[in-house]
Length: 503
Image (cartoon, rainbow, N blue to C red; front, side, top):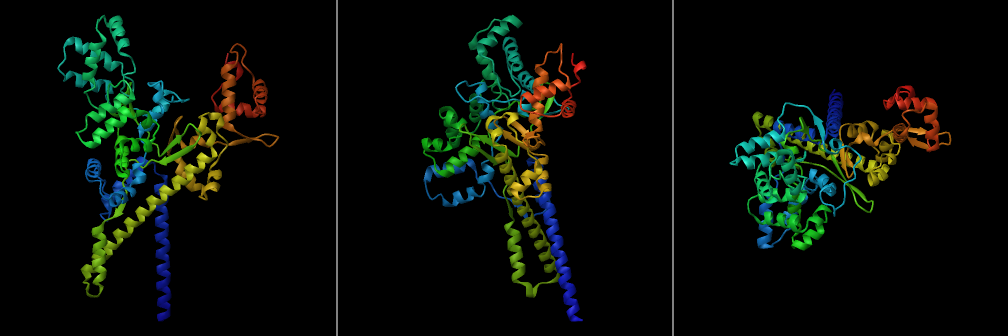
């Protein structure tokens, strides 16, 4: 009888372990599926529900700079604390995208080469009940003491800002346009004076004439500190190294310790390269910025690396008070009252849940890293040149085999996440496409064939548009020998009408 009870207890224990594993796997699968913004919401919800789960405290930036600069003492403890947050602090913000595209206003720096439209390069747009950032600036203008003449100039300056909130026109152009369109005779000095007033508006950086000035305006709004001085020196005197992310050169030039350099980099990355986008709507539409989960960096020598964007996601830990409480209860097991036992069970449950959640976040990080690395390896040429034609045929199964992950897991990773690249921000699904196998056995990307088909139709004589047979022949001459029925299918998928309707 006793043996039977033992067997039943073992079976119940095994069942509980199986259920626990299943619950943990479900949690991991759920977190893997979430993009960065939703992950942050999920973490905040979990911390609200579970007092045993808490965020690691962040070091004070100014204290890190000032403390190390003054005493120059032992940095081991601080460096160890910082190392625990190194991955999060290494994230790339929208600033990196702006640095990649800096050629728009600094001709001597690398030019951003993007094939997408401006709207596609920037962010996803959604409609909403908002006021445009132009209107918000005009509201601030209404609260500013200006003469009628200054108000006219400022209103024109506000209307001349681009969607990022920057002024891309020269002062001389503004002077000419005011004279032509408004009959207002002014001088570059007067326009610059009014522009300086505009640059005092919120958010900091608005009205800047270049990315460098935009960042400097934000730095100048900070309280005086050694950190502020270092940030100012980097952006004003080491901007070229800054745009190329030559952090080691900056650290050496400024004679910084590792801790100081890491802190400085983290604070620089908090600067906003697009102050206009942070104000809400642009041109009648509200802007919801897509936050990429991956920041892909392509060097001039073709080296492609990436970082996992952890955004504002904190490093998590189990509350020390809960750990201490568990230890106290366990040290007094023999004399515990019923109430103490219930408290111990509650504490253990919360600690186990916190540990399980922390592990699930780590699994998400590893899974996303594995998947993105495999995608980059497969589509390396595209990340080098940004040419859609460089995308190779790739399906979920290919990445699953490369990573050792289940196809369902790869699907969850790629379903709702984006990668910010030198060529624009793309959903991960963009890098996948079916293949077409020719009679000779060559595998071609359907996306590549469709792109060629689109080019042929765009270039055709609209007075004599090409039939599907003619399109088939033209594609074959370009190295895409597909059947006429396949041409018709791809044409329909592209929304291209038949020949007689294209006249």
